[in-house]
Structures are given as structure tokens and as C-alpha cells.
Image 1: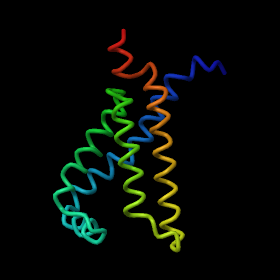
Image 2: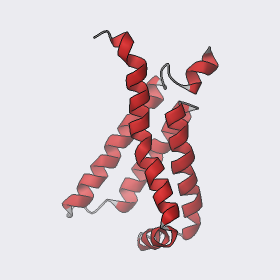
Image 3: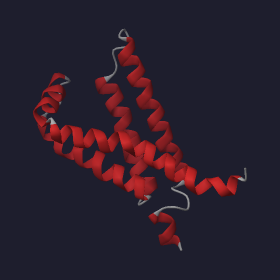
Length: 130
């Protein structure tokens, strides 16, 4: 298979798959707002951080899917994902938490690949370049 033939569809599919977890998570936080506030409070975080978190997950997820401002958005989401790993999944004595921590690290790695390489051809960024 010719790498040039699969580059754009593979990059688009990768962006959709990376963004999906953030889109579902943002909508889930809206659906269980009080529960999410409680979960955040258990980690010592104030409720006032929830609206910007939801906005970052949903708007950032949509921007990644569309390939709009991809490098900047991916950089923000990589940082958010690493900070979330450290705050919520640092109990390595719990294997489940360790798996979640490394899942977040892997997702951040995927976002850093977008920072390095951009969104590719099927994106608003590519259309803007012409």
C-alpha cells in the first residue's frame, strides 16, 4: 500500500479516535455534573474548574476532529491529559489506576505526534494553507 494514499484517511481516523474520549467525557460530565463535582472535590479540585474542563474537552475534541488549530489544541490537550493523570491516577499500588495513568500518557503521546506533524490533508488547517 502506498503511504501517500493512506496518509490523509489514517490521520483523520487517528484524530477522530483521539478526540472521541474527550467528546464523550465532556458530555458525560454535563450529564452527571454533580457527580463530577464530587469526584473533583475528592481530588482537592474546586467546582469552578468543571466548566472550563468541559469546554476544553468538547471544543478541543471537535477542533481535533476538524483539524482546526490542530497543533495548539493538541498541545493543550496533551498537557491537560498529563495533569489529569498526575491528579487522578497516581496511586500505582492500584493496578487499575496505574493502567489509567499510562493510558493518559499514551494519549498525550498521540497528541504530541499531532503537535509535531499537524493534522494532514483532511483538515481545516490544510484547507487554510491552500
